[in-house]
Image (cartoon, rainbow, N blue to C red; front, side, top):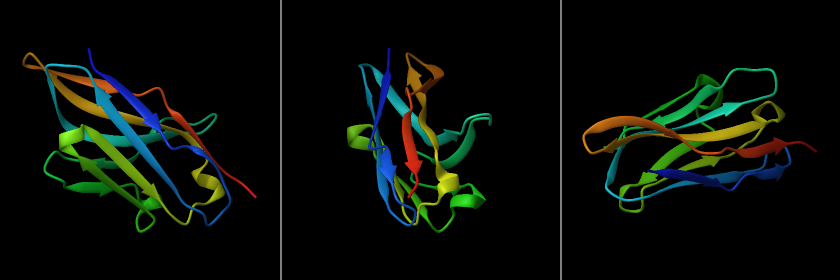
Length: 119
């Protein structure tokens, strides 16, 4: 069993910054790709940023140039640095990981962390 725990959400003014973290815990696993998704009320859960184990990244057009995804493979942790935040970035942010356990490729989700951008 692998658990993903997010942290770092909160309330920030427009133009501000936040850094989200997501740490995977458990035993006997390895992680391939990791990513951040977000879901605003009434909307679907959308991809924000994605990073492979080797460090290749991809971003939603709406966050390019403002958000940066990174990871520490030794700590099984992925980060999302969010700068120049806008009210439309307000959402619950979820971490997702492709986890390998005993040869099986599984998808694991975190519980979500609220990000609110408002003055």
